[in-house]
Length: 235
Image (cartoon, rainbow, N blue to C red; front, side):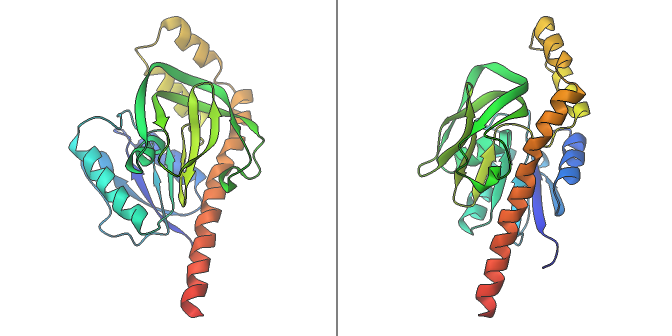
């Protein structure tokens, strides 16, 4: 089959790092849309869609967020597979009827997350694995009919509902992005910032690379769906 064509809904206000990371990690033709500028696809003619992280909160009353929610809701109804990362994870959960809440604290740095081996998104990933996290919001309640597929002490780190998947952590990050994002967290104490920066090293990054497998698994899920549709139309 031909190469997958996936819409990349870039919700980062300064999207260069996000663009670089996803283009490096996702084996597909990514068609990028700068959603903070209210740029959205004109059609749903994509094999799948990825929604990125953002410094915004899902519950902010901003026009671009409302536009994005409407487009995603319509796209999900077509059966299009989705993967949301951090803000994207929260946004997908919210669009599907779940809730997102302020944690009142930050989870940031390399952390451990657990999955229960129930979802193909985590095929080939150890049940407890290392990820880089940076968020102060979380999914408070899952959408009706969704299943929690990953978690840690901070809450939901992965969910699935049908063809829609979300992960709270950042599997796309490289060391440079983890460092620059951490240095931008002025609201954290100097002591905590230093501790997180000390943890951004080759050993932790190498451990977190296992989580990048979610991109291979997601494109595999998308490819299986495309092939099944092609068979159905030629039968």
